[in-house]
Every structure is written in C-alpha cells, then in structure tokens.
Amino acid sequence: MSISVQERYFSWNRILLLAVGLWPYHQSRFARFQAALCLSSLTSFIVFVLSRLYFVEYSFEFTINLLCMSMYFTFLLIKYISFWINIETIKYLLEQFQYIYKRLKDSKEIAIYNKYGNIGKRITVGFIIVAICDLACLIAMQCWPFIFDMIMPKNVTYARHLIVTVTKYFAIQEKHFYLVFLHLNAVAVVGGFSFLAIGTMLLSCFKHICGMFRIASYRFEHAITITLQSITLKNKTMVYKEVICAVDIHRKATEFAIFLEKSMDRSFFIIIMVIVLCMSFNLYGIFQIESPMQEIEKTTEHLLFIIFIFIYMFVGNYIGQEITDYNHHVFLIVYNVPWYLAPLQIQKLILFLLQRNNKVFTLTIGGLFTLSLECFASLVSASVSYFTLMLSLQ
Image (cartoon, rainbow, N blue to C red; front, side, top):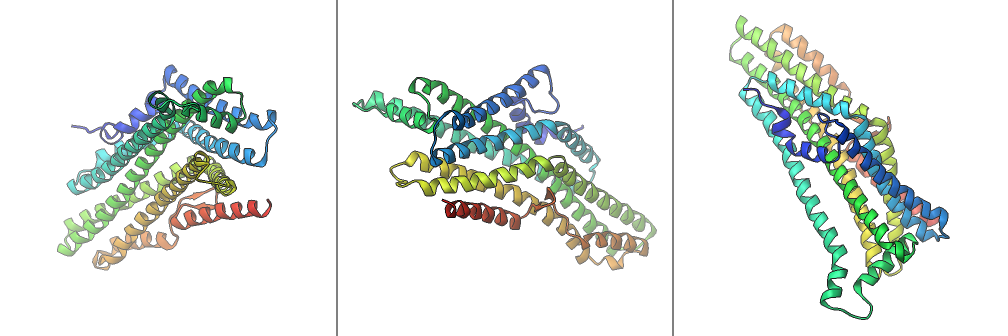
C-alpha cells in the first residue's frame, strides 16, 4: 500500500497553511481570498504605523518605537509574499519527497526517512504548542486590566492605563483606541500564524533533506560492507548499484537544498537586512528608556522583539549549518570505510565523489551570507555594531 508523505509527515503543516491560504494543493478562490486578506491586513497596518510619522509631530524616541514595530511586520509581510510567490517550489519538493519515499525498499532506509520525517513533524507540533501558549499569554495580558477593573475597582482604572499607553504609543485620539487596538491584535494574530505556518513548513522540508543525506551515508557504508564479505561477480554488481543509488540520493539532496535556497534567495536577503536593523532599533529603544522597571510595557515590547529575532536568526543559520554537516558526514563515511578494497571500477566512482568534497557545500543568501553558526554570530555582531553607531550619533 502506498504511503502518502503529505498525510504522514506534513499533516500539521497542511492545517496551518490551509488557514492562511498557502497550501500548494488547495489554491481555490477562497484560498486566494485568504491570501489577499492576510496581505492586506499586514500591509494596511504597516502603512498606518508609518503614516503616524507623517501626520504627527514626533520625537526621536517616538520614531524608534514605530520603526521597531513597522520593521517587525514588514519582515512578516516579506516572509508571506516570498512563500506565496514560491508556492510551486514547495509543491515540487513535496512531490519529489513522495517519489523518493516510494523508491525506498530497504527497511533501514525507510526507518531513517521515517525518523527525520517524524522529527520535522514533532518540531511543527512543538512550535504550535509554543504559539498557543504565547497567544494565551497575549490575550491574558490584554484582558487583565478590564478584569481587574471589575474585581478591584478604583478611581484610576487599569483599563485607563492601557488606553493611555496605546494612544500615546501611536499618537492617536482616545476615541480611536478600540479600532487601533483591534487592528493591532488582528494583524498580530494573522502575522504570527502565517509565520508559524511558513516557518514550520520550511523546517520540515529541510529535515527531509537531512534524512536524504543520512540515507546516502547508509548506502555507502552498506555497499562497502557487502564488498568486504566476499568479492564475487554478483556482489560487484550489487555494490555498483548501491554506490550509484547513494550518489543519486546525495545529488538530489544537494539539488533540493540549493533549489529551495535559490527560490527564496532575494526575499531571504531582504529579510536579513530588515531583522538586523530591527534588532538594532530595539536595542537602541531599550537603552533610551530612562526607568525600565517603571516603563515595563516598553521594556517588555523591545525585549520580546529582540528575543524573537535572536531565535529566528539562530534557527535559520542552524539549519544551514546542519545541511553542511550532514553533507560533510557523507564524505566522512566514504573516507573512513575501506573503499580501496572495492573493485577498481567502484574505486573510480568513489574517488570522483571524494573530489567533489574539495569545496564545502553551503547555503548562501545573496552571495554574502553563508548560513552557519558563524554567520549567526556575524549577524548578531552587526546588529550590535549598528546599535553602537546610533548611540555615537545621538
């Protein structure tokens, strides 16, 4: 019986992407309406935030606060547009994963693929749980002023403090508070949900690619094991087929990783620029707060933005590092097994493969940023550098 990769490993991703109109296999009119609604809500809020800089007399602190928020939602908007444009890329990868899974016959290879497919699924479920907890905290934080007013009423209400904070933050009149507050929360939910759906889908795809690299390692190791048992004509043919299959799945793994990276290369490059600046502005915003404990709302806002960006940069670069390490592991397996005992024809094939390892396989964004832990450190350093530059120009 044929097993559907989508149903087994991407079931949660399917639910999330359907909710924001981005599931590749369901692009109906309603899905396009969902996409248009998400895009318009994010765009309208960014326009509203930036419009405050034009219509209101503002201070430098006011500008920094609005830039922090507008850049965060700009990042979410670019992420959504990038995935929407490359929806056929995701569809192609899902079809290729299905094709590769159908061709697996060895029980150990199937077990390896199942392991990495389930890792991607568990990551998705984990992020969903975190997102639900965050949403619950967000709702609780916004509702507690009104609840406290009912439980412990006093002259200056808790809700009044929230209204003053929001109207001051966006420089709006109090009569527009509920409209802006509703708009902010709606966009936060739409943007956060879209980011969750897109991010977990990309992580799952890369986990499947990691599984393909691991299968390639197993095939090389298994081929040489057959050679060491006995060198017969039958074994020579079997080993030759094993090595060819190992080279084939390794080639496809590298092609899929490059294909996914190249498809979203420009948008990822812009995203890197935006999040580095966003982190710098938020660091500067915290430094500008005279009494962090007395202005806990502003401090918390900037800290949450910084933590979110920090985690995003780390996860993105960690995936790139993981792809490089898995590719390197394939060649370590080939180096360490006694391939020189294999028949001459197989030795030539393996030597050809080893020559390809002269250049380290990496995922590069915009020709400048090589996704790795070193790149993560560089981006954090760049954010801090821009932050110190802003301080020096103050």
